[in-house]
Amino acid sequence: MPHKIETAHLFPILDQKLIELLKSLSAEEWNKPTVAKHWCVKDVAAHLLDGNLRVISHMRDGYLSPPDRKISSYADLVAYLNQFNEDWIKASQRLSYEVITELLESTGKQYSAIMQAQDPDVDAIFSVAWAGEQTSKNWFHIAREYTEKWHHQQQIREATGRPGILTKPLFLPFIKTLLRGLPHTYRNTEAAIGTSIKITIVLEESFSWYLLKSNSWELTNKETENESAGIIIPAEIAWKLFTKALSPAEARSAVTLTGNEQLAAVALNLIAIMG
Image (cartoon, rainbow, N blue to C red):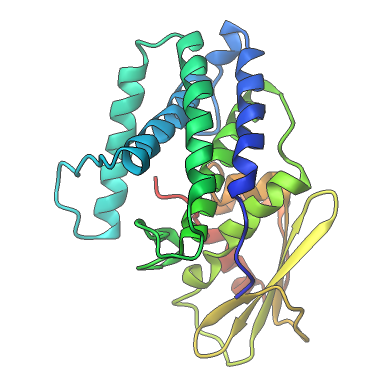
């Protein structure tokens, strides 16, 4: 498995870009639809605010609201989170654009400080379930939080035509984190020991990782020989595909498969969000 992914230092940078972005939006832009299905720009911004408030409440104040139902499976957890998120979005309709921005600006600083203060090597309170982990190290949990911050801001930027974070310093930690879910995505895919799949994401340059089959599937950044299959995905497609903004069928025409195409195409099913 590749080394741990450092993201805590990036939260203030990403947060500053978010506030600058929101302050530049017109009322019309706040109401533009996004790739987050039925959420408009305002809804996505409100969702980001919810994340800040919950982290501060939990990690600063020790307050955690218990689920209102029994959670017995991954499907139960996803259903609970979807309803949890929708309840907040409904309530946030009462807030103005300015109030949402002001609250994001003040809570974002506290949120970033909390993330930077965490010990990355201890066990996290919450595991990264979409990677199939029962227990995760804190650095992975923090990186997962970073992917949430990154992809929701990118949804707003795409909806309003404001580029700015699809850049190597900010995108590479995001995609590295998401690809940690590939071994779990391939968990039921049979292949001979030694089979390798090359996964390439194309930004200004190409970045490659390798899935190697031993007793289980393992992700590595060390080049393997004689790959059985390969997949090449443009960065602007990858972020939407792996966060459910695009289906595998919708993304397929923009993706290049090589070798055993059926084996390579399994990677299109990676979903690295809970909702």
